[in-house]
Amino acid sequence: MNRLPALNPAQLVRALKTVGFKKVRQNGSHLVLVSQDQRRLVVVPMHKRDIKRGLLFGILKSAGLSQREFLELL
Image (cartoon, rainbow, N blue to C red; front, side, top):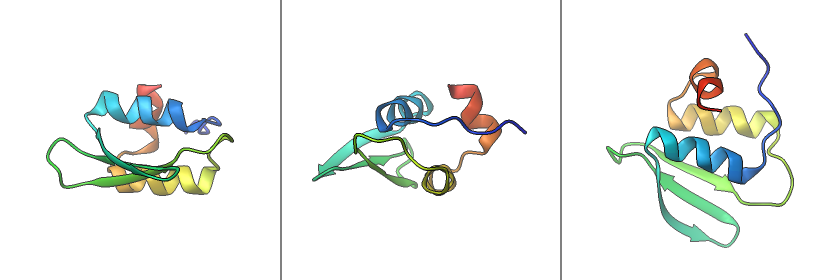
């Protein structure tokens, strides 16, 4: 399996939006996205630095995406 690339928050949000997540609100520097069926909630920190791998894995798990599915979105 391929390694996940380093992503900035804007790239991650763009990929999640292609799957159907929509922005619900933003509290400070944290953007809250919800899936189309409104069953999954994802919080993305909108900081200036890249998202670390551990946090990226957690966000993907919350979104219900596998690494392979996510890499196809990029």
